Length: 153
Length: 75
Image 1 (cartoon, rainbow over the protein chains, first blue to last red):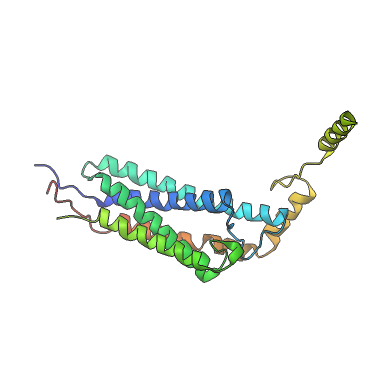
Image 2 (image 1 turned 90 degrees about the horizontal axis):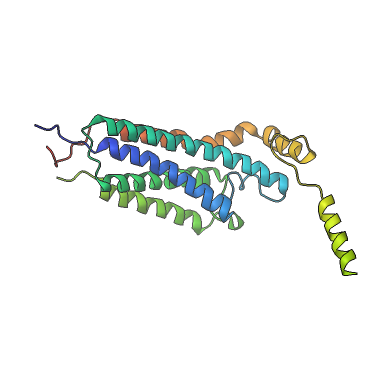
């Protein structure tokens, strides 16, 4: 008789990787390539080289935190793989990644954009519809991920 | 004339001081970055940057813990 499979460790590992990769996407795409904002550009506007480089340091610390969370995701995935009773269906991986990325957008968007105002999605506009679009994008990924990864009878 | 302009342009390029403002460099730019980083609301800025992390970690703990969700595939 085989042990019943569980999906939770796989989804939890994918969710953790999703948070880390979502953070990396934000940092790489928005902070560095498009340069729409930096970590503290709402409090410390990027007006000269010194303010740009100071923001760059805070961007780096944010990336370091996302790197550690991604590493935690790899560790959780490794642990799940060694259990022998984990259901590694593709929908659990994709669903977990989407849930994690969605959670990142919702938490980061709520705290950094809405609550603290340390930066906004398009800093040149300040608080704008883009901040809400960022949250809506996160919510859509969260719901889509949940629909994929949820247990099925 | 063209050659002289080219030589002058190259000389100007070679003489231009690089904007050394790496975080640990000894230069006026680097000192200004460190000053802005360490003396202007360091604790407040660090707290703001770190603010989402505990909540995200709590969500990971919640997802990883709790009752296992058994799949019907092999149940």
